View 1 (cartoon, rainbow, N blue to C red):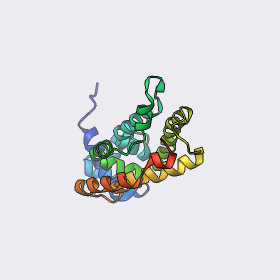
View 2: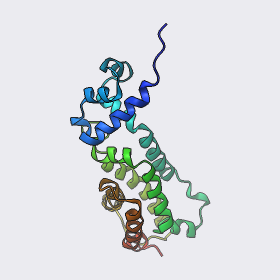
View 3: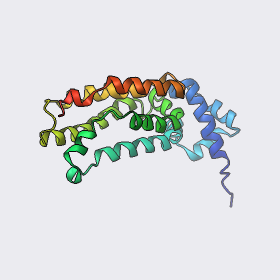
View 4: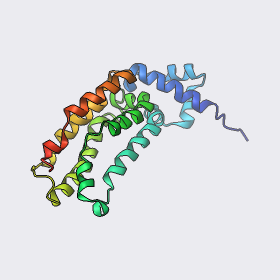
Length: 204
């Protein structure tokens, strides 16, 4: 019985990540990936159905982390929260936002692939779809604040989507432009001063 050479897997993922980062999914060359990993194309097809499945394997851990981030924010139980805690969910707290940037910094390579190099894959509209999912989460927070009489503004789902898309673009772009960590820290300070969710939603 033959034993599968598991040493191939990390080499293949590493080589694929480098090729996808250089050329994007569509222009990435499977033979180049194999040559740089020191494996045959046959070894790839024993593990993956094709180039897209290989791309998905490269970004899987990062996609899972981001899915978890969304899940925490869309599965909220507001019943135990005070009015003050509901209000505070809309604070642009610089430390909290910087922690978010820190999480994304740790996965910045594959986050960049999802945002900029995924055309032609199931992830090609990742940034847009992430903003849509976060819109659902934000609407839950907004509706709770509205129900309690804390939010006075009337915000439609479409308007919330526009706001969320704008907000998350400001979070994505530093990674698209490959800012240094020092630049991101300054960017975080600026954006926290720029966005005032409480004022926009008229939260008292």
